[in-house]
Amino acid sequence: MPHIFTTSEYAYKLYVDGFCDGSSNVAVEEYRPQVRIRRIPDRRVCSKAFNTLRECGKFPSAHVSSERARQQHVEEEENVLEMVQRSSTSSTRRISTRLGVSQTSVRRTLHEHGLYPLNPQRVQNLHPVDSAMLLNFVTGYI
Image 1 (cartoon, rainbow, N blue to C red):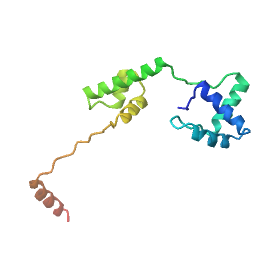
Image 2 (cartoon, rainbow, N blue to C red):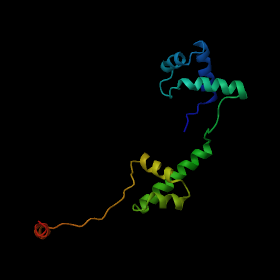
Image 3 (cartoon, one colour):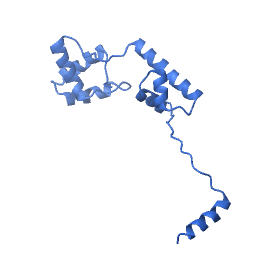
Image 4 (cartoon, rainbow, N blue to C red):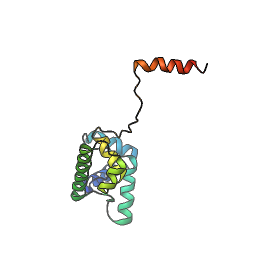
């Protein structure tokens, strides 16, 4: 998923890019110390924002998630976690089918919450008596 910035962040990036005479690499280094908490843009962000502004008359805004989409994502996560809590042996495929979400979303949600899909394998238990029988079996073939 690409990083999408706000309109004011795009405007500031273009301002810094212009201040640095259009050198995107220098603009990123100029921008880095001024922004401590937010993500640092790649050198291509300024170029893409400038080209989109020049061609379309607006900043890039594809895939900007709205508050409603975020709310749906939170509800989706809660549903996945609730289903896993109810039945921890359900597969990610079954959970995704029942909830109507992609299997990738289910796996991502589990991973974000420190849960990992487990594929249990049944194995036979070995007891102390079994070792003598196994030894007899093996020596019969030698």
